[in-house]
Image (tube, rainbow, N blue to C red):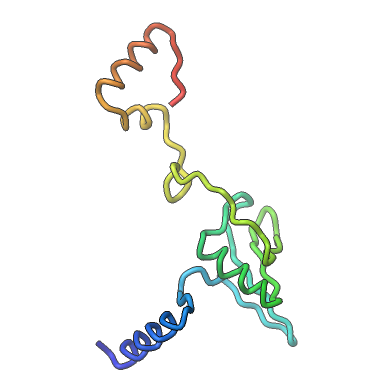
Length: 130
């Protein structure tokens, strides 16, 4: 192990022992400085894309310090993140990238017996919303 890595591990252990949350994760994509001003910006691909838990934690804590923090997307521009911005509720069942499963994919996750029952009902015209 390199000396720097060892020193970093020692410092991390000390800080965590003193109650600090130490993380590299969640830092905004951009720290922008201009003439005594500073803003932090997290870039998202589209309007509805939510901040990840670590990103929300870091940005709201930076905002508590009085720093200007934003989420930015090409179709929505800048959205201010304040110290009290709530963590968005996300559908954890959709997977990491928010992919919505098809009816067939949801059916495949069920037991073979349950699949047979649902397919038999479907053949009778009974609709199942999985």
